[in-house]
Structure formats: C-alpha cells, structure tokens
Length: 125
Image (tube, rainbow, N blue to C red; front, top):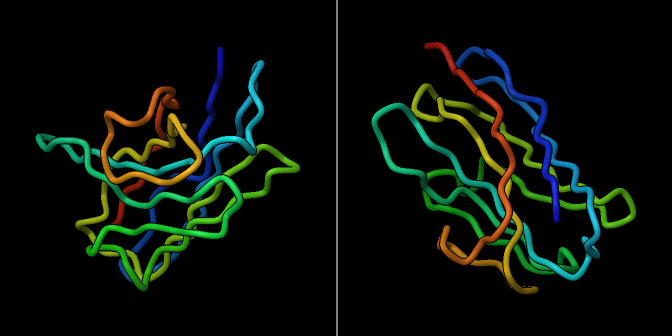
C-alpha cells in the first residue's frame, strides 16, 4: 500500500507562485516509479498537469502550464514537487499527485495507480 500526501495549496493572486509538495510513504520503493500531477476544476474532468520519470531525467507538461510550472523530485525524501509560477485564475483547481505504474511519465490518468487526497489551489484575479 502506498500513501501520497499533498501540501502547499492555498489562495494566491494572479501572477503569484505556489509550490506543491507530495510525500510518499508505504511499502514501495519511490524511486522505481514515475510520478505525476493532475488537477480538477469544479464541473470539469481531471486533467494532466505534469509528470516526471523515475530518475527525474525526463519531464512532461500540459501545454497550458508549459513554461510556468516545473515538476521535480527528491528520491532521498520520497517527494515530488510542483513549482507553479505566473499563476492564472484558470489554474484554480484541486491538485492531485499520483504514482505511475512504471518508470516513465504518462499523460493518462489510467496509467497511475495511487492518488493523493488533493490540495486546493485558488488563484484570484
């Protein structure tokens, strides 16, 4: 069993920044797996935000966040991060981290087997 706990969400003005963290625990080797961030806004489907390979050597981004968000990981701390800059009101959503069933990132939520409870990000205009 794997537990993922996100933190770092909050309320920020447009143009501001937030850094989300996700810490993994449980009987699993964190560094064996790629990790991803997804988000879900009210009334919308969950969408891919970013992913990172097991080593951190490859990253993947949705077009809507490319150049503004940066995903990273620290395998020594079993943690993955999402640095979000130049935030826009349309970034408002609950953000989830998830563990990929494999070592390479994926854009598809069905390829992830464990999910955190989510952290709310609200960007005011």
